[in-house]
Length: 223
Ligand code: CA
Image 1 (cartoon, helix red, strand yellow):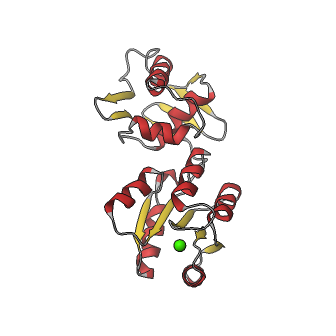
Image 2 (cartoon, rainbow, N blue to C red):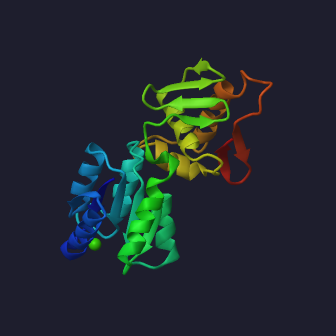
Image 3 (tube, rainbow, N blue to C red):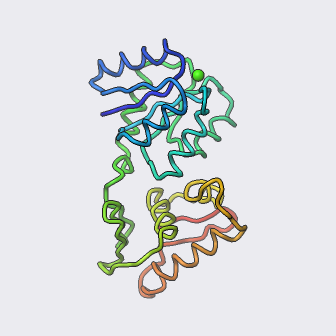
């Protein structure tokens, strides 16, 4: 396991590093949000421990930007804020779990282990929902063995849905995960892309159950 710790308080960062190294983790430390983002974007980690209040780039932005750039490394947020609102913002920004300071070291290790067991840990693993497969290494999508051609954006949307199977994803979540800040998003942009995706994933297979489902008033889910 290779872990990146992004934490500006040297004492906490070093305590976590030393503790994790005793658990046979390989640990890198970044002391501000920019350095943390750069490392997370260029190196391969099994998990990231991310403080929220950071100089240069706050934790929420580090998290959001990593997800927007297609980096799916599991992120555990460390937050001194115990307010539910902040936890929800953290999870909505793409984090996988959170821990409120002060925390016990054994709990941190347990949470990291749980994160690393998640199926989406390996970004290169082939994703599968029924007979639909997506191979991230080849960027290849097939249903029932038949290749399906997708544009970049359609592919990103499908990958996002498939990395969160049976989860209802809101339009906001979809926009936050697959479009950039400066993208031109019209109110019905997500609907348009979902419609295109259906025409390629579900329509050609009328005898099979549709995979892309609308949950009225909430969003979309796959499977
Ligand atoms: Ca801090």
